[in-house]
Image (cartoon, rainbow, N blue to C red; front, side):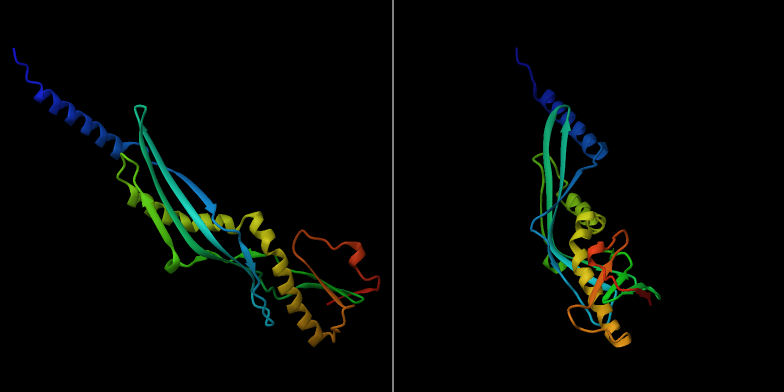
Length: 222
């Protein structure tokens, strides 16, 4: 007796395709986002005699990775992976308040400068961006994954710009910028000398000057 199994095979195929479609369109699709740096950051100091707000810049090649892994009923359906690499310019500035707290102690000028803040949004060179995306073996979402990764770049860069590591990286270049700006003002307004014995110490919020670096002469506020 012959048994026709073709209708059974077709029905099984339709069932599998239906289950896959339901999973693809309705399953939770929140992916994991991973952000890494592909090269060490190099601080580039921007120093101006005019006392502009911008005090330091960090230039870095940033690499972003977004991976989306899915399983269905214990079956691994592959991982869709997208990468973006782009040159990024983190710029930092201080607010030039109307009045700064400046104290002269003998040959030492102590400047209490405003806090260093990043200029947001962070700028990156779109013309030099490198992008790559690939579907998992049972996935069809590589373009959506890449688009979502692109949209996540701005908030991710903002987090990095505000991170303690980047703030520490730009503190000394920013201090030098403020020191030179104040030095020019002192020479012009206070007849300050360029002699090495005359020092300008710049303090940002939360910092204090060691006693050994303060001149013992009487202080005067300006």
